[in-house]
Image (cartoon, rainbow over all chains, first blue to last red; front, side):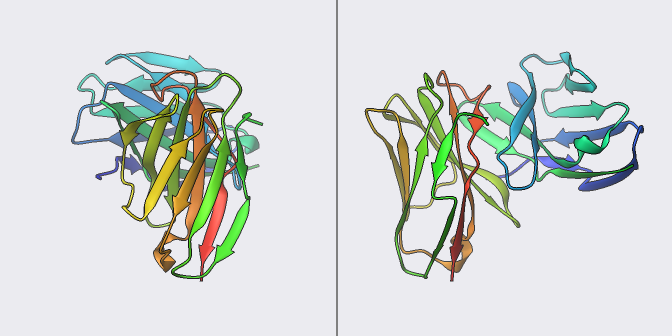
Length: 109
Length: 113
């Protein structure tokens, strides 16, 4: 099935910088989820969004559920070296779960 | 540690063979999900079981099948393996039937030669 459009594919940033990534879809989703995956590990849930327009924070992470229900973004503020990894968005609707291809984040100390 | 266990960690097999991947969900979780992650396809949802019954089906090939047993562990069977089946296979579990707060296992890396 059609996966979500996630951008950018990769980011190289300096420690302390803010990061922004987003996901878009041609379909509506009722739930948006953001995961982080470290090498050799399974994805870990960072933030879950259940309502259009919802803005949710988890520490230095902030995510928003787009008003059209077709997009979501994730911001990371004041990045640190342990933020390195691959970030995935996922959309869920009616037993259908789709994932973005991931944003690979590299943080230079 | 998510509490979800998967065995084996690595599996190398030949084309045409059949393998079984095993998953034990977190204690108390009734749902088990299977995902395939390959370099060119990203993370793909395969199938979900809830309390022993199939709940949702994603991009699962007919050569693949799964089941959830009364003790809630699950197995994913992959048969007539092809080179393109080489991937990481993740299992995840959640308390309820919705995948919102699911916890992923460490994955099984399958290499088909």
